[in-house]
Image (cartoon, rainbow, N blue to C red; front, side, top):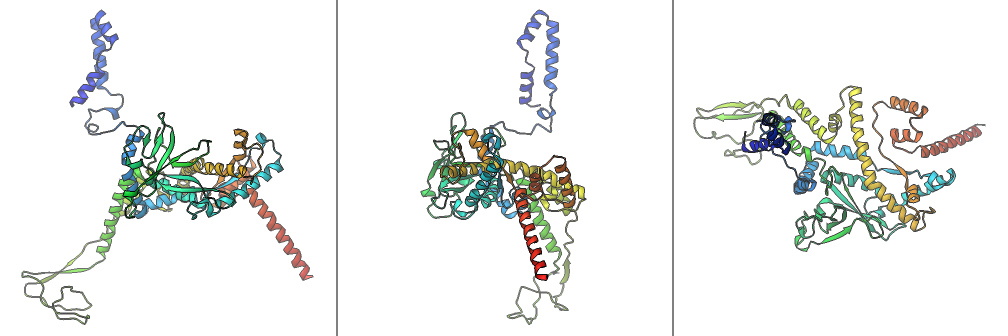
Length: 516
């Protein structure tokens, strides 16, 4: 037991004021209390907190706040996470899987305004929802909504989520494009550009590029105009920073900081791969070594052992430019080489690849999948188990995808749509009485549901049958079932089906008329 443990035990066994009072009145009883207190000090309530055990004595931990534990490691974590996402197939596959099933081709809004609060009839509410759909599509499906004039709103969703997972966080700044029917546009910023001006040290009100009040409320972010990893000449000498308030003076949102907050008072996000960086790297090295071993096993090399020095001279071959002094000897079919006296030939047999490679990689991938909240089947895209096991893996992963999607919608999609609607109503493109007069009315007009990729189904027939039963018993609506099965919109489907049925009827009448 070291001195630290002895000091800790002595502190825990130290008599209290009550102990001293009892010992003064009744020394025998006081001695018993002191013995009991000393025994409790030796017997830790949790074995994990016991410092005297050999297995726990070397465990060093920290007790810092969120930023103390995170900020210093972030640059290294970002670089390593990005490198794994570029070069490690498992890491790349994990990020691709999360983006594909959370965002897909984009999360689309379906307006569902609160008719009761607004006091609207069904027909009038439907008209407003249809106008919201059309106007939002006009903005969202145009590249004019992107400051770089490159991606539309739905394409930017996947890019933002990928950056948030790989680099920990990212920033969306709302700027005035000055083009098209709407001036609202987004400027996307990578996490590396968010930093303290002049790379100054962190303070209580400025940490890792995020400016806060004394109470800890984020109020602005500082963005470097160039990327710190840029190779442009003279970049470091000419670097400047812009201060971007999160909200303007009138309460309008100016920027959205996207990251998954996992601790209270956390300022910056942590890459999704952070907890599995080391096993991913080591597993990648092991896979490379196994691949090299497999390649070597397919080679056949001969070595000449000699008591003298070097190989005997060889006759030139038909190879272009061949000489008797060549040192790049080659093997040929039925070739006969002259050996010097005392020389013999031996052959290298590297053997077959490690037979335990597959089981070991699977065991490691299962642990990595647990850290990434992805079952082994989805992480490795390997569905060879039973139907029940494969479906269970999909259901477990889907619970995570829904959670991540809900979080992404709340911190990004809903905020962007609210900013768009503010401009649409202010410019008169949307007529929504009372929108700016009451926050509750504004909230009622902004209500909508977001549809995304549907959960993969191994057996579509069983899924449809279950959905029909739940719909018949009132557990789900037709809209909910449609969104879950296909990711579509039930009302749009009904309108399209009606149109197709009318077309079929018209074609049938035309065919009958032509035949007659």
